[in-house]
Structures are given as structure tokens and as C-alpha cells.
Length: 73
Image (tube, rainbow, N blue to C red; front, side, top):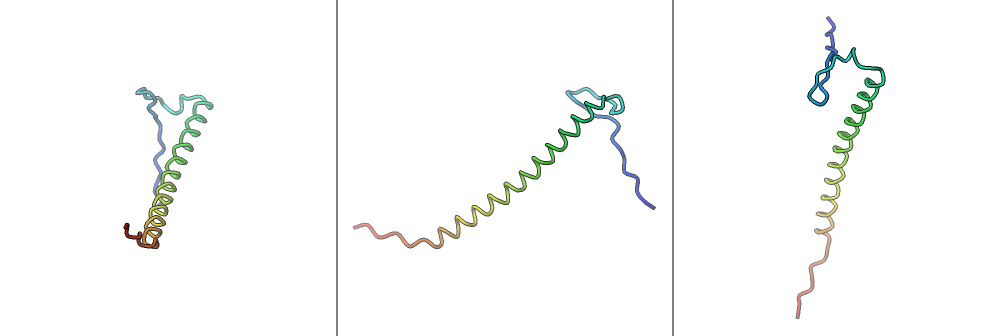
């Protein structure tokens, strides 16, 4: 038997609860835009973490490949 996905019927904005069905089409569209932006921020946060990990690995590899400093006289 297929599971039913529960649909959100209410949303809280600025500590006020609204029925989604009472919102205008424009308000629903703005909410959708916000969700897209939130998802993109999450995706970029993951990508940033990956790039920072790569940067750290390159830094370690560079440090390991540098010649020993010359002894001072």
C-alpha cells in the first residue's frame, strides 16, 4: 500500500499562524520563492564545505612538498 504524504495546511510567519488555503496566490508564490532560496543556501553551504576541505588538503600537500628552510648563519 502506498504511503500518503501529509500536506502542510498551516504556516507560521512572524509568530502568527496562517492557513495556507487563506493566503493569496502571490503570498504562496513568495513562500515558494523563499523555500527555493533556503534550499539553494543549504546546497551552497555543502559546496562551500567541500571546497574548504579541498583547500585544506591542497595546503597540507603544499606544506609537505616544500623544501626545508635553510639554516640561518
